[in-house]
Length: 463
Image (cartoon, rainbow, N blue to C red; front, side, top):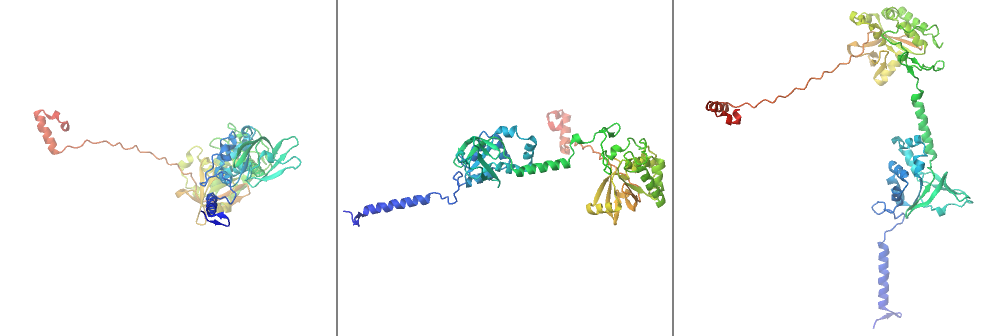
């Protein structure tokens, strides 16, 4: 007979304690979730196949799924799904294919705008489950919900029964339902204000930094003048590049000189050129340069026309000692004097201070010249500015001989010539000729003996 304790048999007490111990062990063996995280993700961090994120990638919202992949947001969304339920507002494909501005779509897909694309997509996701039955009533008014991009959306219901998400109408409520979230189909794409501001800023910068091809001035290749006259404000630089403003040919003589004041009545280039040539003569030591500009060529006339049209120039004037070193061969070729002077004219306004500061800061500076496509190299040397390279270099000898804001004349102690391009001649590759292996003396003697007997043809080494 079983013993009893307070009227209860000991066997029943033993069974009760055994059942209680088994239930406690089963409860402790279950996985704990103290933070309230979703069980959609497994312990290894992989997304469950029944997740709302997997459903989005496999759904008919292909355009949104493609943007999610291009935005490199899969890992971020996996972490969000692992922490809590989410609600995705998915625009229909037509809203992204046809109704979206092509320029705005190109902006989103540019590599430099990845952050804007990520912000746009996370603006469509709120970190909580909101079913269609949880929309606010029309009398309640809009309800604000935070999104994954730290912005907010407003859910509203109208008296007509329509439900909206900000400005987009809800067209497919509860389209995809999963244990860790829900997807609602909406009429159009939702664009946060930050993305719109970024897009407008980039578009404004593009319009400032670049000139559209249709807005660029058209130059007539026959006359080197603008096909359509353009209005230029007083004091503004001319629209036509200085290389097109120059008359074609080896000399600038065919271009007629303008009257006093120039065609636009902005600058009196003819008087300014006369002033700087007179300054060269009075300064002393630059008579040869003045003689080439006035008598040997018509460069002075053309320089006056360019200055009258608003262009600025800097003349590197070799002194008489440097000009005397020129040989007859260097000046006898047709157009040689013009080409020499072209290489000494820089189509920008430079002074001794500006050039010295440039070479001090950048080391070597390449200035454009009127002798295309050659450039003159300037660098710092012995506390001054050195032009050219090697033995054909020249130093800034007499700085700021003439500076009036349009024409700058800098005296140098040498004549500059562009660096001649040396053509590298490729040597033909040597052809290796395989020499026959030389036979030894013993083999030659053996072959000679076999040859006397008429048996050498049977041996390949003797052939």
